[in-house]
Length: 336
View 1 (tube, rainbow, N blue to C red):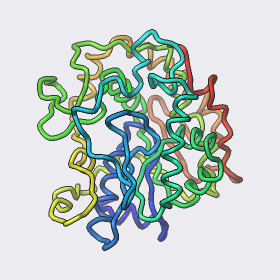
View 2: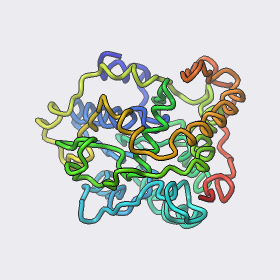
View 3: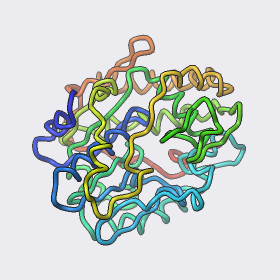
View 4: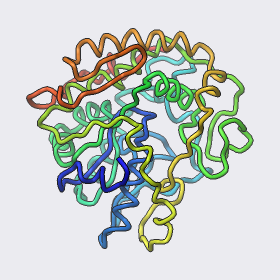
């Protein structure tokens, strides 16, 4: 893929949304597509980023005159917002959040109702596979509408262990993205959140749940009935970032720079992550064991060659999507 238009052409005229495995370029692509739409349309564009994410002060939304994420405020955001259970001893956390599943579902319901009222026209968002299962539990009809409305760009990373390590780093440090002058090696430069510890402890016993929530339902959700393109992360790396062009466009109702700029990339992140995370190898071993089981049950959609994961869209199964996972206590909550 050399241009943003190459991605758009995959949709054959349908609106595009982004999904996939976390830490595989989904934020960059979602923002790139949003910026492209703003620059090439006279209509206001809504931007919901991770629509199903729970984080007070961070993933919060305003709805008029068009749905969009609220401007990021350092003062209102708090640390510990994602996967805090990965490094604590508290019990039963909803997908790693510091609340129970029932509390999370109640919190999400008004947000979903607001989006239903507005409709999906000109709405840019990304949503992970586990989020579809949560949405299905809250509102089955709207979940199906969302799933069939878009052409989904599904991103994954061949080096799945890199993706896993990056997730563990972001989760334990509450630091998934870097912007402006932030340097991953120098915590004094971190101005958009993040725990500045020299070492972080990864709980290996969460690995199975993480792999289930990342890879476990892909084969069930994305069938041949769902408009979808599966793309490995390296395929989008040559797409020129359009952020500077976007800054020159008069765009009402756009979120602030925190939400519209592309996250920074670091060539030394793998080295830094391996040094910063205690128990990472044990966590990887458990994750690998579970991933092999998931791959074996994917009917060829996923294959492992050593540490390399590959996905073949021609192996998507026939039939309707299946989203009726028990996303209550056994699936979304896990003991830490």
